Length: 352
Ligand code: EPU
Image (cartoon, rainbow, N blue to C red; front, side):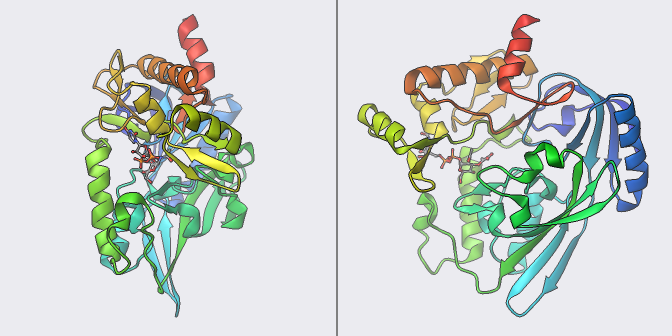
């Protein structure tokens, strides 16, 4: 279904008051031919096309000047083999509801990823991860449709080119690919992943249900509920630094929070850096740095896109001056023409 001049306020978890020229609600695969026509019309009119899932990892920097495709495809299919469960899940299913369904049915391996906001189709795009588990560890394949040609393609785990908060779906090559479903592969011979600090205490004989409950508790305590306070989860990525930069930092800040990443590389906790730059509670207009978790920027209710951009820029500058570390945003920035960056948008906003 195609609508014109639609509000996006309820379709982005930041709750920013922005609009789109047109929006297509994709609820069933039989709408695909109609969708492809709509995409071609937009392209012929030089209008941008954006695929939107739950809108929980996105910052609309201004009104969108093209076609938004809101993916609401639904359905969960379970296939069982001797050693594995395979879950074929449509892209519009709610991620957390999937985790609940799996955990309740004794299909284990998703419990660490409880309460991550958003829909299943968005999970491969940024390779969602939390508490020691990343989507790439459980992904078997991803089905996409090319919105220009209508061709259906299946990508294997390897072809998705996953890394930290990254996949091939973030590249230009996949710009016209709409994820329709994912297949998860979960071992029957499950082992708990409880290496993360607060989960360690649960011990080796912990059940998936206990991990699920604990993860929900930690997240509820630290991270603001998007239904109560507008936000998009972690706003910045945890920066990756080399050994030299880390030891340099440790000389001045021996308590800096970091984890080993790949050989010779370390992930710094961006939340620690922002917190220790004393930015918690710092506010610009209606946007502020969350008091409970410094990596989350929130909309107090009336924030404009410019408020969020100015706040993000301030955080980036202060952290860079204090620690010499450059923060990159994890949230996907969208301007009137499509994907953009903080640097480009702050320049635009300040020149207006
Ligand atoms: N910390 C502070 N101050 C704060 C918050 C945290 O100093 O205000 C410190 C903590 O004490 C800890 C460190 O920072 O030492 C890391 O904090 P936390 O364990 O909360 O995790 P994170 O690194 O900030 C990442 C993911 C989260 C994911 C958690 C748990 C990224 C960008 N974020 O956050 O993912 O839930 O680990 O695994 O990788 C998301 O992507 O939206 C998201 C919430």
